[in-house]
Picture 1 (tube, rainbow, N blue to C red):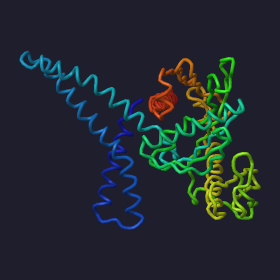
Picture 2 (picture 1 turned 180 degrees about the horizontal axis):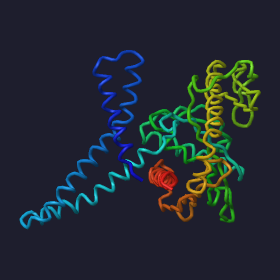
Picture 3 (picture 1 turned 90 degrees about the vertical axis):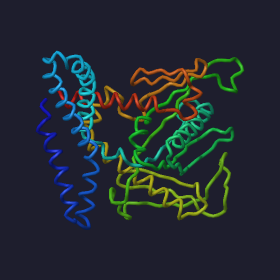
Length: 352
């Protein structure tokens, strides 16, 4: 595939945008041009670096004929033959269509599936793992919902994780997480298998999803704590039902009905945005299915085996024997491998 004409157009567009900005563009025109230039500038820098490298390689080739310069030219060529393919690969990756949601913050949902109390206990650990990962990445993590069990497990938890590129890093976490270990309550020492579902939704702005108030049924009720006991005397908990889709969001973490409603609307907006996003990207989802999976919550993506100290990601056949560190939020090795696999699959599809 000859990329040269496309690269020329990108470089020319960057020059055009710089000219617009230097000529005193104002208002929306300035903002639009600045944003577009910021998006393509890293790619233009790679293109410039590639062209300099290719020019140096061509000059080194001619110097091979000069006995006095041959040794120096060979050394330079060897170095350039390593750097040029890396630059070409980086440019091809940068040219792949961007997932518009990648730069967004995210809503994380963690819920126990099969396994009763043990699943709830592991759900609490997974929720804490993601909180620690957010802290390691310098993101802000606000708990929207945390419904604890009497044993310290988690019936269901939601968090808003805010920062640049959160969704790009966390989107591969959606799916079924399986744990294999001996529960504290197991007297025979037998290993039990339990599962927890994780969903990661890109956070939606009000402009992304237009919600008609007439499409909502809003119920208020008293919040309850672990074991079902009522924890306050006012009807502060909120349940919002989106009638056209049947999506239901309930929130009771705050003591204020107003705050619970605001949080519930944030989650509803994210779910509606994700529903629309998935329908628009059905083809891409099908392409990814054979690689890193659909991200669907019905799909088992990872196993945490405590007796063997290993964590295995089934989508990319990667196993790490450092379960303690993973549970402390050290997820980047998995995330980097999943990202690379996804990029390779999309690159192969684009060049087929």
